[in-house]
Image (cartoon, rainbow, N blue to C red; front, side, top):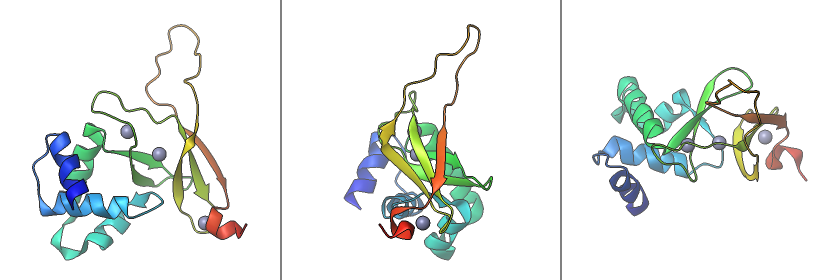
Length: 138
Ligand SMILES: [Zn+2]
Ligand SMILES: [Zn+2]
Ligand SMILES: [Zn+2]
């Protein structure tokens, strides 16, 4: 739990069991996770509202980011280089059409697009779909 402790400390968040557990669940996965699946993974010790608050706080602090999946649901994954005031997710989100998992592909990154004058960029997401490593069998 040392890693999770450090993350909370770094971001000025109070240490709670639920927060530590949530971080560990997120880190233990190679793909993003939905609110429902997180709730299941955490078990009965953490209720829906608590988890909702945890995810909000984590997102605000630049610890996790939300990803709108191809089916319109929301999933969460750890951020790799974000801070509270600088959330940058110019990496690719890959959805597997077979297992329905969503992956952050951090080594495929993009520069922000050049927008016409007067357009202010707030979010820039790129997504792709296909088969993940496991499902493609390659
Ligand atoms: Zn982020
Ligand atoms: Zn897959
Ligand atoms: Zn991502």
